[in-house]
Amino acid sequence: MSRAHHILIVEDEPVTRATLSGYFAAEGYRISEAGDGEALRRAFARGDVDLVLLDINLPGEDGLSLLRDLRRTSEVGVIMVTGKSDAVDRIVALELGADDYVTKPFDTRELLARSKNLLRRTQAARAVTPDAPVKRFDGWALDLDRRSLTDPQGSDVRLTRGEFDLLAALASNAGRVLTRDSLLDHVSHRDWAPNDRTVDVLVGRLRRKIERDAKVPTLIVTVHGVGYLFTGR
Ligand code: CA
Image (tube, rainbow, N blue to C red; front, side, top):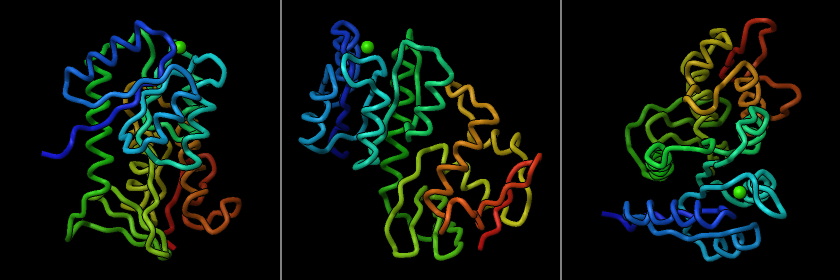
């Protein structure tokens, strides 16, 4: 069995932090704790963090700002944890590249299940599986088994779960118009409370990653009033 996964818990409220820390440690994870942005950076700089549980409401820099900063250098798994049930925060967190989101008060077992799921996915993205079904377009390769995307230069480009699921749906239906509703079915999981905007946000993020010019997309084309079409070229 591989080494224990390392989870960084970023939470300013000591009781909540200790509760989460104790719960995940009892499940066999290695835990680091941070109460603010500075402590997060210190812990992260020591390396080998596999997953960050990031509270949005923190003293000083808030979790969304820290997420933006983290994403400049890292594609580590991030689950946002927050007291706000504000849908705007969910959309912003998604735009900034969060993988998942839970709202307090949350069930620790549910947070554990989501964490396991995300760790499994990020690990699967690293593992090499030969003979996987691979979708190729414009020099890119999307590997559906490894859940990885390789750019024309051969470098891995990490996608969030939502981005991957959306691109997989599009690439598997190249040449067909997919409605927002059907795309939503491919990316939905409970806590995002996804809506039409979710699909548009994810398409925007994907375009910035894979289009030669995101302002003049040629791979993911908007079909006004309906949805999106993946041209595959
Ligand atoms: Ca807090």
